[in-house]
Amino acid sequence: MAKKLKNVFSTFVKKTLTENKIEDAINDLRILLISNDVAIDTADEICKNLIESFEGQQITRLKSTKKILFDTLKDIIISILTPEKEIDLMNEIKIKISSGQPYILVFLGINGTGKTTTIAKVAHLLKKNNINCVAAASDTFRAGAIEQLSKHMDNVGITVIKHGYKSDPSSVAYDAIEHAKAKKIEVVLIDTSGRQTTNRNLMMEMQKMVRVVQPDLVVFIGDSLAGNDILYQAREFDRHVGIDANILTKFDADSKGGAALSISFETKKPILFVGTGQGYNDLKPFNKDLFISSILDLD
Image (cartoon, rainbow, N blue to C red; front, side):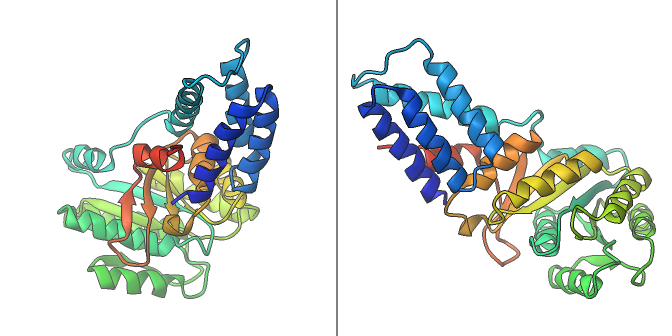
């Protein structure tokens, strides 16, 4: 995980220890970060903070310099990965259902990111934690989307509420919520259309969905391998609809590691889970400390 990003920071530290001007090393760091899927704004933030941290200081070849660089980078990355609000999903679900109402999650993301599979993984995780749920097939646009969700949910033993194609997505979600209330089901998982974010109708559809269902959590699902595209997608969904949390798919295949930093900086929202494979068990809580260790193991 994040092997290339680890090499980027390692190269930066080694170069800085032999440079008279830290600015030269930081300029090289910026280029390396961007080439390893760290978004331009995120790379600029890291470099700006580094410059500010060392302003007025003379970088020497003292033994302690490496530790100073390490600690400075760690502080910057912790700051980027620290969201405006931490979310303990299981605890939030328990609080909501204690009021007798189902907890409602809406999932956003474009096609091809692994959104439907990820929703099934979330359903499987909830089931393992003795939390029952129902899914709403509110992607009524893409051919095969309802069948795909139904197949995945059959595999994990979850009921799917569905209408026909071209039907109102918000109506499907509403019926799933009413079903949950009637059957005392604790969580509603709402799949949505994954058309491109430039599609105005999609954004209006998502806005209507949020108004109708009043979700407890809106989750953006992004592909770790999508490079800067993931930032554009998250920015547009957040601007038009609002994002509360993120899930990154294909995290096991992301050797660069830039997506986690970029999505955290862009949305200021937590990464709840990362997808680490194709199986329903391959959804892991995002471990911020482990991720930082993996990219800042500079020995």
